[in-house]
Image 1 (cartoon, rainbow, N blue to C red):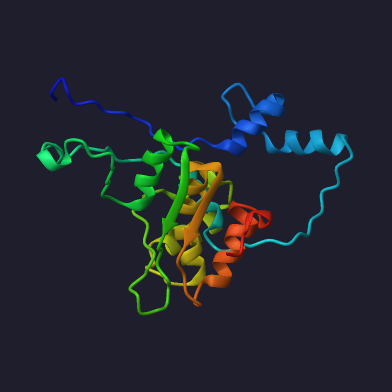
Image 2 (cartoon, rainbow, N blue to C red):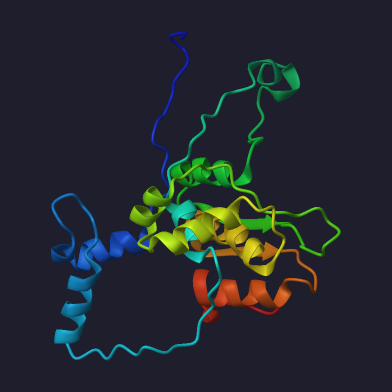
Length: 224
């Protein structure tokens, strides 16, 4: 390895929600930094906050796995294209082009540009059935590992792992693909930042629910 080459390990997207919990409920974290959900619930119950077992929301097979992917550290490294960068026409460029899996790229960007981006435009798979979209994850977890990471029983962990390797193009597959990418994209945006998404009728309703209920909140949607 040359002296000029620098490697940054453990690239992980900042978790704004977890930071807020750590700030306001530090006693709900154990000595290893793990969030204790039951203690948190008990704390809120003491303050007479009513938990309802029913609420409006969006659920799908793979949702807990998608959340894991959103917080899982990047498994790749970025390497500069020195030949391209050394060309005279690129010497003073202020642009950045990164090639790679878009989820991994987003994690690298979020680590460097957390809450600094004014505008994002994405053109995700439309999932029309003819656009070639299928979901197949390359992360390899065992059933026991997945049980530990997302807190499900062995049967559901196996169902999720089978699902992630099935090359599915179902609504659940599309949502599992989209959730971590949109979650991390949100971390990039400034408070007054905006995201534009191209989509067609196949997933427009599903996308609206995902954005409103899981990512940005319904109050942040704007019609232009």
